[in-house]
Structure formats: C-alpha cells, structure tokens
Length: 204
Image (cartoon, rainbow, N blue to C red; front, side):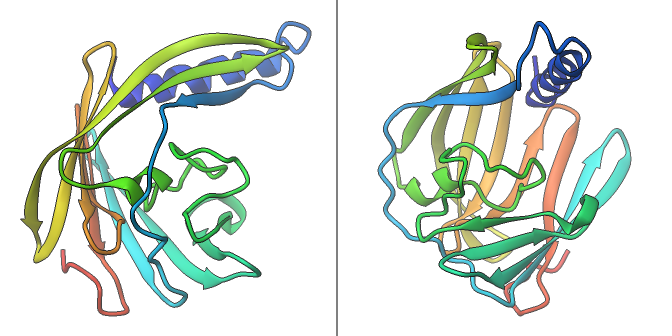
C-alpha cells in the first residue's frame, strides 16, 4: 500500500465515520511517535512564498504557501485550499496538534516538524492509528532514515526515505538550511518546489 493509498484509506474511513456517527465518535488520525531530538529551530520568515507543483496521473496541481507574521508564532497560509486555510507554528515548528508527523492542516506539504531533527545517520519511526469513540484502529507503521546528502537545484539537501510496513516507499528531498520540502517522489506521484518569489526559489 503506497503513501497515497494510505491517505485514500483514511479519507474513506473518515467518510464512513461521518455516515455512522453512532459507531464512530469524532474520528481522527493519531500518531504514536518515537522520541525526536531537534537540532534546528523553525527557519521560515514572514514574506517568503513557496510554490509547488503536484504531479499525479499526468495531472498537475499547483499549491502556494505564504509565510506570514503571527502572534507568538509564524503563520503559513495555503492559498489553494478552501478559505485560504493556515497553520500557526512555534519556534520548533509545532502547531496545536502537537504532532511531529503532520499538522492540523492536511495540505501542509511545505514543512513537517520532524524536518528540524535531520542529521547524518538519522532514523525515526511512528505508528498511525484512526481514533474513534475511545478505540483505536492501527493503520500502519512508518520508518524514516537519511539515505544521503545531495545537491539539488543548487541547494544542499537531505534525501529521506519514508517506508511503511507494507513496503511502500517515498523519498523526500529536504533543504538542509531552510528545512523545507524540495521534492517528493512516490509510486505514481511527484511533488516539486517550483520557485519562491523572495529569491530563495529554485527555478523550475
């Protein structure tokens, strides 16, 4: 099962939960995480704008992220999602969800808190569950490791392998300085950073 398939499965479970509320109460995705030691604080600055191209089944979708100043946090706004949704991240990249795997905003591909822990030889793991009505259903275990360092479009980057227990594998290129996503490759899909209007961009 690929990462995309796992996401589709979660969506189906949540939709089913909405239809059968007596069986599922307030379903949500929960991650049980191994300890994580970060070595860098959140690096994005207000005024930066990141644009990504999401390629899947010969279809391309663009997503744009605006970095804005917040009250006691840095806000990241996703322009293509409904109602211009956003997250508010603290100095360690965390939002109210308290997760290092993801954020409250499902569209937030630009950055994940675990990216602040990267270093040579780094490994990590977590387990994904669907929680509902006081019960939890195990979905998958995920394993992360640094494969190597690589210069990608002029930026020094970590290549991170993310593998699920089913054997599905995804590779992410993470900028070593800014700790943002540069590229993702998985089975049948690719996400690339197309550019940034403030001068950080990687022309694409």
